[in-house]
Amino acid sequence: MQTFDLEANGLRALNETLQAQTPQTNETAWEVVNPRGSHAIAVGLDAPLDVTVRGSTGYYCAGMNQQATVRIKGSAGPGVAENMMSGTVVVDGDASQYAGATGHGGLLVIKGNASSRCGISMKGIDIVVAGNVGHMSAFMAQKGNLVVCGDAGDALGDSIYEARLFVRGEVKSLGADCEEKEMRPEHLETLRDLLERAEIDARPEEFRRYGSARKLYNFDIDNAY
Amino acid sequence: MCGIVGLFLKDKALEPRLGELLTDMLITMSDRGPDSAGIAVYPGAHPGFAKLTVQADDPARFEGLEASMSDALGADVTLRVKDTHAVIELPADKVAEARDALKTLCPEARVMSAGEAIEIYKEVGLPGDVARRFDIPHLTGSHGIGHTRMATESAVTTLGAHPFSTGMDQCLVHNGSLSNHNSLRRKLAREGVTVETENDTEVAAAYLTWKMQEGHSLGEALESGLEDLDGFYTFVVGTKDGFGVVRDPIACKPAVMAETDQYVAFGSEYRALVNLPGIEDARVWEPEPATVYFWKH
Image (cartoon, rainbow over all chains, first blue to last red):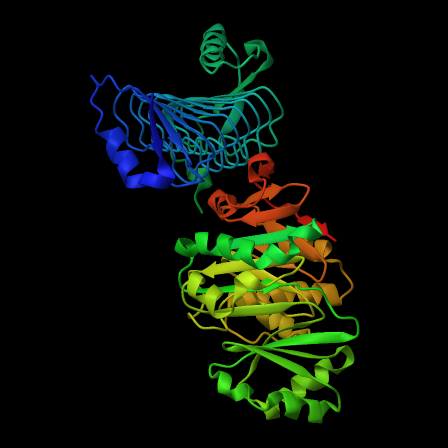
């Protein structure tokens, strides 16, 4: 295990070091100490690394991730795993707003709560939240799965395209063009797989599924002024 | 952008360190607001006395003010000069009279705050420089609020810096921008509440002061602010013995809070809190949108 002291060596050196690892690297296990809420920790990785951040992070931790696993042993600031392409990001604590925004792939696991706009404009990422999500989560979500084991705030899935939303608790309100959908066997299977990979103990049967009513897809003359 | 920090001490043993802790938090927030910085602190009040914090670009203007103010009020007045600011301590019942007298005795001076406990120091410049100029690390007190400004709604001037104080012992700092501050300013003017600058935040401060003058508690004033203030905001407010936080319903502007047995702390970002004692074991959370949080001694 390589240990990197962020306070002593600085952010630029950290990201340059991690980004320089090739897919064939033998130095796959990394530990970042003294993160102290810094921004942009472990961003733009593109190798099968396993990076553990020992503490809470600021904005954009693990952004643009490909292949790597990034574990945050604390809470994450705004935009964690933003635009992730592949790999896994696990937050042990809470995540601030727009966690997993615009993500194209990979798995984001939040063991605590996520605040507003979780999964905004998600494009294929899978997000599993053990706690609650705030308002406007999955706003304009296009593809992927958002699993919420707790409650969802106002306007869940507003203007959603084809992402699938699974919520176990209460949904405060649904956004425009988002509706409850039938939970079919293939959805239960997807959910079971996601919960297992997220190492969260919950029964898929306890969730309800939400998705697009597809009424905003086409221009409707009755909506014109 | 802007950065906010706040510290409300529950443990009196930390009071001598208030300035030092707040300065560290404030400097960490420099890159959120390098234009100007300010701080409001509440060192203990002296019964029967009040304080006016005044500012003049040229501190030489304060020369002789202690004597002339004492004469004008017919009472003992003390004056401490700190860089461009001076804190005038005077009998509590003479505050209005002193404000009037100031207009002739020192017309260049602008009142930053008035109250039994509050002192406000704010200037244009990097937060670290502002803290040094006013010796903020050595300030003591029960609670304090700081702000680093990246200006959007009005010019980078001393008077445009935060905190704003529009009522006795009240102060407010703001991250965000208000869209209805002009109409609200006119409404407040009709109610007899004057706002001194073109700044949007001062309107919010004056709005809360007005609500409290109408008999509402700070908590109630903040609740009605959620209805009447349009725009983006995370506010942190201080009163003589209280500390409050509220975010607009959209909650774009970041906020992190931490609480231990010793304190309640606010930061725009978690990194502002990392040097606080016992932060590793603090309860850390993000305040909910459109929810009023308030602590009182």
